[in-house]
Length: 353
Length: 150
Image 1: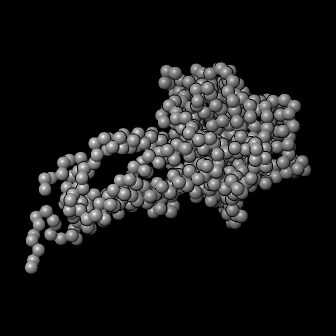
Image 2: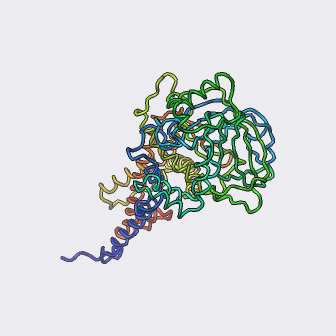
Image 3: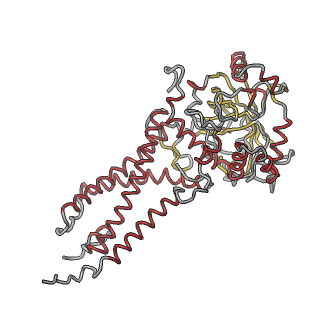
């Protein structure tokens, strides 16, 4: 007996099933593409973390770069001079709590303090309106690479066993010369307090009228730098920067002046290897004051991600591609190190969250 | 968890948070409507295992649409990030900062996200199966129209 033909059912299942399969595979494929599963060459946060790691692998529980550091607390004393540039509350005259971290650009949390050419100052400024301004500044006056992709190449070249790799990178990237010259010739100081820290990336300040302009910022020491040499500093012990800072802050707060530089017409904002001309207008907007120092294992900076895209309204990212890339990589680093907390125990569990 | 370091990431993340909160609110509204009005009956001719699968998938969808935004919100809170919806509009933290809690919530958010997308693909396949193979009116109900008369 033949089945009664049903006008509602398709004559063959093959067509519909193939169509359904194709649609579902297309949607799944779009997901796989977005996740980067089909693009092994795409620059992902994880590839940056791999390139940052030393040959022995990353130090579990620690930041993947700038792994060695010390926490401080204090405040940002805004003088109000920046209020005409940005409506961010941190730039209105007042005193706002700060959690900071002075650190060394190394993936090794046990590195000798005298071994790190680049030092860093990371800050979180909190304002009563509930907003935050996070940033991570370094001692170099310009960045080493002009794009995240080029920085990735530099990391690969630095980590390469081939001694010619770095030379080849520098040859192919003349923009590396500014950073290279600074690293080769700038004096090393004997204190975190004596260093100047630069934001390097261009951000946009927007004022109450909505007008916006590109800026870069720096933190200038308020004590006279004492020039030294790495082999001289190496004799002071592996953690001399941390102990020096602790002693110094015990004797009195340490301050850095925050200076904002306004871009002139045509100044490059998308390339942190390019310094702006020295004669650009500079506005001193306040001071960062470090009034207490805490060891990182128990300190308040330990579990803070100084993501440079955490900005209050009135400050936003520009066409500089680095803050977004840094945000992605810092977050991947944060996600990994919080999952590895057991490998980096607090020394005083009562004090740590 | 993004798979790019490109500037587009900033936009994606900025959309992700308000989108998640919008889904949370809409899912709660949808549940309220469903509790009051009920849901359309499945066709009488549908096999029982298929009906069960449909009901369980709905339950999973509601669970995920509510759990995912809350897990993400709690994860941001545990990481001590400001939770920006747009501009100066922030959400308050719902848990205290904790690295262990952040790690657990991150794992849950990432793992459930994959389950969620797999469920969406399954749902899409089932909807098309109703539309193209069974032709039983379920797809028309899903799409918002009325089921054709039996």
